[in-house]
Image 1 (spheres, rainbow, N blue to C red):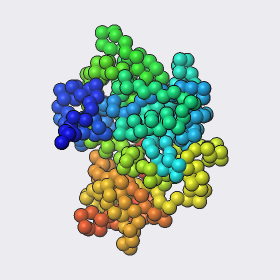
Image 2 (cartoon, helix red, strand yellow; image 1 turned 90 degrees about the vertical axis):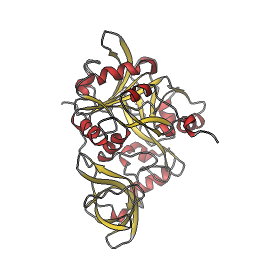
Image 3 (cartoon, helix red, strand yellow; image 1 turned 180 degrees about the horizontal axis):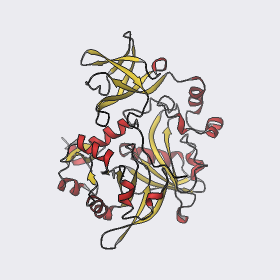
Length: 382
């Protein structure tokens, strides 16, 4: 029999994770740290209070070039790329012909002249091979896809992330939220590493994702970890942070069986795209915008202390099956259990009482607005 472990990949920071005491687990085909010595709870709270450093090098990075990549990619996603200014980022979704979500992704229009008119994509690790093959196949002759497997990706997240990163990349603290730029990371001793910065992240906190060449990423990571405010953070806290922020995990909260409208992501579809369509599943999606979807992703707050995990059945207050939890667990910042899932639209109003079938018992809960912990993204000063 083949050894499954033989197929597990590692990121360029694998040795560093091990040296830091990371507990390594398989995730999306990679060996990744689920936590370090502090444990998930303290790592989560440290990120909310100061700054956490995450290795997200398993994510896929790619450049799209061609005569008009924005117009071409708009035939696969519902996002408005034609209106995206240079140096800005847009969150969107690749769609099936029936409007289901193939993956969610970040699309950047680079500001540097050598990539003028092009796009830079960041896609999920487990989906990256399929995503890029899908784009190449569907847009053959219109765009060229250049995988950037030579690049690693770090995420520095937390309320002091900007102050920390500005020690190495002066001026980065003035970048607007959802903006990107190419710069130089000045290592101790004076050497400069080329980086692409994205002021975005997956925690609800201010912060950056930092694209850096594989052969320099360990030096960059070590320089950041030498700062008193920064600790290494694993997948466990990454998941609890994004759940508190009400952010979707592909394969759990969104997939090909859910549309952006059902997923409560209608905000990603601009007025122009709603009027013009021209993306996969447009008729179904526009109809759901106008007349409503049969189900909606909502926040769920269990009463008591028992968490409700993924696949927990959701019942109405009178016992009718109405949906299922897709993500759930303990929220360290709110000091209690939190969850999200899909319910029939009639039960999606915040304040609606529901029941959760946890280990054979119907436990009381309530539909609530998300996020569970307030977003603290950077707001540009007027």
